[in-house]
Amino acid sequence: MNLSTLTAEYMLFAPEIVLALGAMGLLMLGVFVRDQDKAAAFVAPLTAGLLVAAALVAAFMVPGEGGQAFSGAFVFDPLALFAKVAIFGAAAIALLFAVPYLKAERLAKFEYFVLIALAALGMSMMVSANDLISMYMGVELQSLALYVLAAFNRDSLRASEAGLKYFVLGALSSGLLLYGASLVYGFTGATGFNEIAIASASGEVSIGLLFGLVFMICGLAFKVSAAPFHMWTPDVYEGSPTPVTAFFATAPKLAAIVLLARILLEPFGAMTDQWQQVITAIAILSMAVGAFGALTQNNIKRLMAYSSIGNMGYALVAIAAGTATGLWALLAFMILYIISLIAAFGVMLSMRTSEGMVEQVEDLAGLAQSRPGLAWTMTGAMFSIGGLPFLVGFFGKLFILYAALQAGLVFLPIALVLFSVVAAYYYLRIVRVMWFSDPVVTFIGPSATTAVITNVAGIATAALVIVAPVLFYLAQNSGFGPL
Image (cartoon, rainbow, N blue to C red):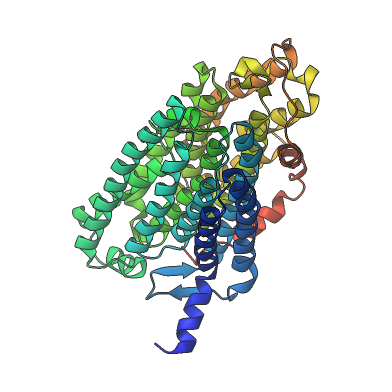
């Protein structure tokens, strides 16, 4: 390998290099600043800048034609570019949400922001993985950072319990993923996605390869909290600090669902008839658990956990289509869903009284009277996540329906619509409490940063309807070739 070839490969890996070196530098900076509060105050904006810089490097400095690096283990293509920019953006917003919260809760430590950067690094590797080994490295780098973030509030019993549950069940899912990868390697003789694609397309599919694929699907289903691998989600969402929950609900979900789509559509694209049945079952079960599980929840973070399970079921419908249309419908849906989540979690981070944070649905009572701006934002977010017409979330689901119908999966769109109707009840319940109940608590005004991000995201849930076709066009051009 000559110098020019090595340089070209490292240019494809430039966003990851920026994140890795930046995270190590920020870690050293935080260690050498003795005052903990000052260290956090220094590292927080620098980490946000680092994430923005990584997104800019991915968008403008990586060669436009993309390519593969490290003997095909790493790929940079339009799909990876689209996902990386979205992941870095979501991580930066979650970080900005965390700064005032951590300060108010006396949890401000510079390690929090370094962990966000390292988790984003793992996610970036996940969406560019083109080999079983690089895939597993990315998943574990992300997961280890997330385990620590879940239990970041060490003085809280709920947070410690959430971190422990996430770690134990996450280790189980990693074992399933690794066992599946070992079976795939054993029955194909390769770890690279390109070689696996050739092996899976040649001749009759072996039962061992199929078992390996199912184990890998189960491992990644845990990462996106799809049923029946969702058991960690409600407890971790409820127990983790609220900005950590906001982070869990956005960037990691996008990274995991893109990785799952890449694995199924690229190396195992020739086995669509086999894995489509598994994805269909998981999608229907996820939509059912998400729709019915949230009906009895009073804690808004647990409710959003079940909402997340249901929405990942909708995303899996797009993957089950097994087509290029399904892929870009998935990408568009995830971006619009994340925008709605940012608005919702911004309101949840504004639910602070003089005695501390509150999390019950009934605490939102009368919000339209006390803080009409927040009430309008939460209303837009709930309607959008629920898929009610003429907000951005509606169009995300509409294109998933189109992709599934185009693929001939008539029963999946029917299930999606039916479960969406059930789920609409608990979104409308939140809206009813805000607009038709008398106030029970008085919220302290949110920080300027939280207020700006929340208001912009709230407006975006309606305003982006105008530019939705542009997003769909960008998503449509983010595939990795003909399927």
